[in-house]
Structure formats: C-alpha cells, structure tokens
Image 1: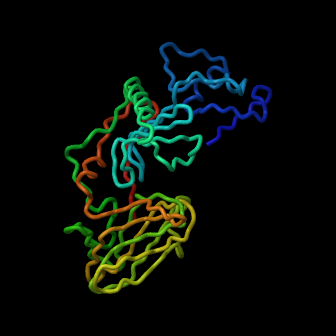
Image 2: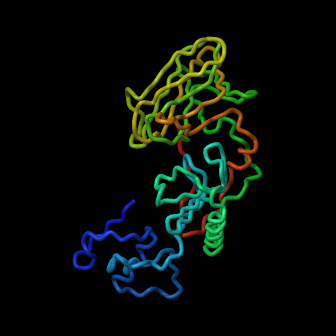
Image 3: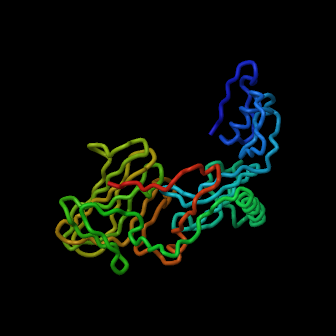
Length: 319
C-alpha cells in the first residue's frame, strides 16, 4: 500500500520515490527530522527515511525488508517473509492443503498479486533469500513455532458444530442433529466473490442444504439475504453446489444440513472462486491426511521480537 507524507516546505510535492518502506521506519525518521539524539545502546528495527523525504531520488541503505508473523492468522499459517528488490520469499512454518509448499517465491515487478510461485524455477534465489531469513531470525533472537508433541489432530478441520454433533467416522464427517436448525460454521475461509461452495454428502431422509455467509465488512450475519440453498435427495452420495453471489471478502460461513431426524454424512467440502478458469481456494477432506496434520499444528514460544510486540494468542468464538 502507498505511504503518503505531507510536510509543506520540506517534502517536495508530487514526488513518488521508489523505495520500499515500513512502519518500523517511522521512529528513527521522527528522531532525525526533529533532531532528537538517539539514546545510547538503542537499536532500531527500521531506518530513517529522512534522506528520501528530502530527495526522492535517494536510496536507502537497506539490504532487505522482513516481516515476521509467528502467530499466523485465521486462514494463514505462521511464517516470515523477506523482500529484496522485486523478489519476495515467504517461508511458512507449517504446510497444509491450502499452503502445500514451505517456500513461495514471487517476482513482484511482473506479479504484484503473487499468483505464480516461482520457487521451483529459481532454487538459487530461494537459497539466497532463505539465508537472509536465517540470519534475520538469529540476529533478532526470534522465537519461531516448533512442533507440539501433545497436539491432537482436529478431524473436523475448524468446522464448529452448532445444534448438532459432528464426528469423523471412517472417511466422512457424520453430523447428527441436536436442535431445531443444525449447522456447521467456520471462519477458516478466504477469498473474494463471486464464490461457490461445493459439497459431497448423503442422507437417508434428504432435505434442504443451505449456506449462509458474512463478509469481512459485516460484524454480524444480515437478517435476510446472503443465503443459497439446494435440495438433497435421500439415498446415495450427491454433489451440491451453492453459489455465493456476493462480491467482497468472505469472513464467516455457515452450512445448514438436514440432520434433524437422520444423520448427514459429508465426504468433502470445497470453496471455489467463480471465473475463467474457476479456482479452488480451500478443500476440507475428511479425515485430515496424517502427513498434513503433522505439519499443520505447532505451538509458539513467547515472542521476543519487537515486530511481534506483546500480541497474545486469543480464540475467536464462532456462531
């Protein structure tokens, strides 16, 4: 995203420097422009931007830019990135169906949207940038995620049962109703619409299958709308497709199943972006493959890196 600076009489109007900067550069910049001496033994994570503010053609004395996110996010694993020139390397600390590669390499000059992973085509570049990450983690004393030997695999992969019981039995997710409107909910979704939810399921009795969603700009589910439904016939396996017509970023998804009287079995669930060509964004296959599960769940020691601040883990209630 762009950084805009306005300082009449000091910063040339309309100038567009090409240097890459970060919020960690603000503190040393303010000290320099205000002529406040740096305290003894104080180390900065960033560097002063004063030279670029005064002269847009100036170059910053920085080898590379790093971003460390050991806590991960609702839909992304923990990792660390390095950017040097137009090259960006991501090192994930765990892999899974949505992030199968430990390294992702992008040429931001030609691929600003980071759509094509070039790690296999440029192994020497990966090795070079990965060494910078190693040095960065060592120099900062960063605490990185490590395997948790006591972790138990989450067979439902983040789907939270509401008004129902859900267990993985054999190779399927078996949902048994325990209330009037049983549904499964998850916030482990990402993608900008239009989207389509695809589900393979079966039920002896059949009934309505309904998806409801909330966008990232909505705090709660709307009172009406933003639903898609189809009828499940009783009997053998069927593939259901539910079009999520809304545009915008998906944040929360509910899947209502006709499990009030008889259980519903779910083989898999997929989230697709509709376009040319269609793109599968996420797949939930029951049960979780063992090799993925061993890598996907790790525990983080206390964070000592300034970029990480005092952020603590917190859970998000799903309803």
